[in-house]
Image (cartoon, one colour):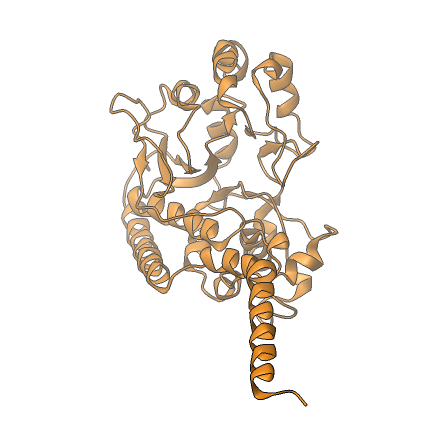
Length: 347
């Protein structure tokens, strides 16, 4: 028979081995999910911001109706970044001469090294109060909603909201983009957001938080995916910041972190449920996924920049050209500047 000391030793060894197994094989996934959760304090802070923006929009709408003539509509450019805006000179050229038709807002991850824009920058960008973000986590959803809310609060004339990354470049002139977005006098402008329902990876993405974890709020047949980058009409931007039900599911931690990309699902799923006819179902941001590595798209370097590249990136299967493209290396800035006036901004 085993002695009591032998039994205790065996039990201790078993517990130690179990702990080691947990630490080396299970905990990295759990820790990765936990580190990207939205804290209660941050969630409440955001909810307060969203409420103020929604109330402000209602008040400003009543005020704008009484104004005659109406002020020109603006596009809010929402930069979501965790590094410096390498292509700032190109964007400054893009915005030049259109100061009354746009606003720029920047959500810069406070845990990363992002330099404030120089006071001499002509675009007058506004850094909004930002919180930490992490790829493939609900923190990106929060950051994008934060950008929308701040833009709505800041200027009631912001009627379109374009999400941009630090790796994005414009493919057309500002006038081309503004004219195409506001080409009709309709009060119900369409939103340009990719909404897909037949991708082969959808089942794994849907169950990333556990089987049936999205129920009852989100059925599998209602689950959608699309590019993170959108151009939303104001009514849809308001819809996003007012939404609560779907957010309760999308902010849950993922058990399958390899299939967890909530920022690619929250916005397409919400708008597909609420107003599918008011959305284009295609994005205006061109991304090249050929030869992607680690979930990142192809990144164009300086040697690839040419007028032919710009023209090819513009081409789309939809009714509109692509407006923006990503990703580009910092070294590609110089050749892009060299062809900006003659190619990119000449429509």
